[in-house]
Image 1: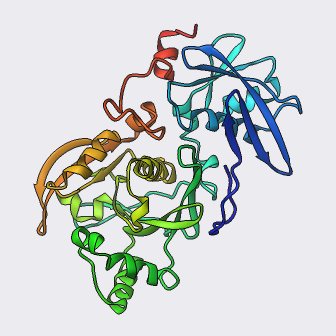
Image 2 (image 1 turned 90 degrees about the vertical axis):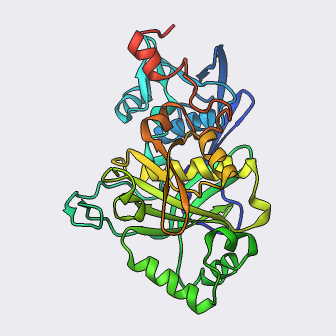
Image 3 (image 1 turned 60 degrees about the vertical axis):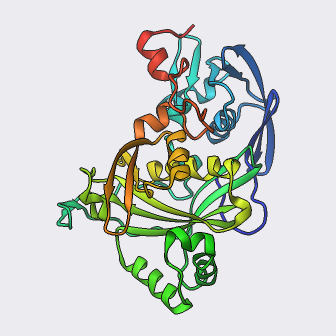
Length: 358
């Protein structure tokens, strides 16, 4: 779902499922792809009457079918009907041959392709190790600007996006949020406009930190601080991987609280960090050990509770989310809160390892 600009107006939705049809809109045309239920979560996607979709239109349709799975989903393509896209889908890595006649588009593979969610093509930054406060760490790339990520959230019927914070333009909103009583109680950064200007200046000068706004339909509602774990204070409390990342969050607007919102922004933020750097194998957090609701939200979203430890300013809980677990368990799709990492019958590891394609 490629969105070129971020405004306060509703953003275009490129692919949506309506019952047994996926509507794909863009490039001056709209096509409708029929969906047939094969049972057990297998969905057969058929070419449109208007003709075979482009490669990107096909990927968008598969995204729409796996964006909010109330059941496990495996998108099945007849290789004869989709012969014009067969080679591209296999080359992209999102599709695997199930048998001689069908391809399976596995969500855990599809959702690792950055093209649908990142506006800028991904380039792997060269790795050179540098000395740091807790040992060597990679030289970090320059911080990106503008829109970083976008994803349609079906249960909100809105587009969630991430964009880099702009120091001057976003200062008044940042200042207002930091002085909100509820935010100040746990973020502890209430202050004057000048103090917050200095805070953002220090953030801009620190190569391991990146301030980001989370938006719905272009309207900022959330603030995140993304950091590289090796150089962060948390790096003194666990053996951080070279590309491990962590994050802090505040919800800026009161109406954007609750389960419908946290199940949108939390997995989307994790998804972005895994896509932005394919060498990132784990994401970590360090909520206050006394913040039981936040820790429950994190464990329901797939984070493992590792240990409690002491910062200078708080008793914290180390939580950790592995890349492989996030994608294999399809945690972007509003996971079951009672069992977020349940084994999947239709995963590529389950089907392809055993050859169980029937």
